[in-house]
Length: 283
Image (tube, rainbow, N blue to C red; front, side, top):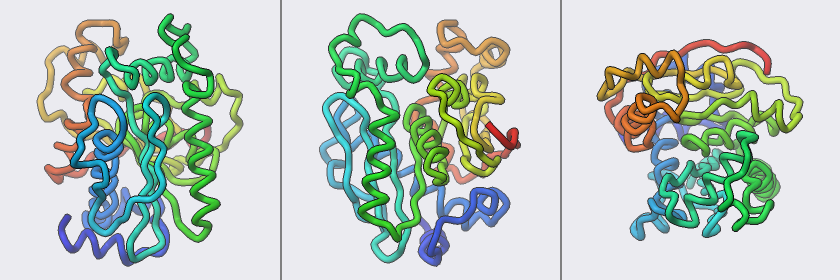
């Protein structure tokens, strides 16, 4: 990370508002987004599942130390990061393991069904209700860390399912969330009968413009969203935008090309700021 970006972050005693982040300088924007992207990457590569890499097990991000984590073989996974010289903290919730042949991916698929209010697949009987209640496990982890570090200014992040958990827990705990490629959020709040009032700056979600989850999430987020032009546009993605069902072949092609976190890392490392869009004031 460029030194200027590090300086922008370490001069802070609390996380900047998401509004000031969007409206502020490149130095501030990337000083926040770049380390969050690396933490989100580690949430995949340092935890159980198909994306685990031994080199990442104890890895961290420059200027940060690893804190407590939740890392079961099957279930909600998250890492925490604390500034080495500062008062900021991050929880990075892991997204979905798309390898359905393993226990990690199977549990994630079932957890997505639970959050989506869908009929559970037969294989979900292999897991307990406690294991599949990712929302409650994420909330417990956030509460535990807040109790351990009461003077820390927290921010939540993650990709896909991880961004969903970050935004949901953030909304309930009044903690800012900056995520990558979150699915629709308001339907989950309605199904769980969770009463929250959020401002348009409660959360910020970053998307690839052709990610089908961006299409699905229009009007269903808890805050602002920004989008990058696709690095490799797929001609059929415009057709997916009109009817963004992931069962459609054209949407599956778009999903494969745009939704993976490796694609989002390309956007961040390219260094072009996304274009940001408004959202309704309340959920």
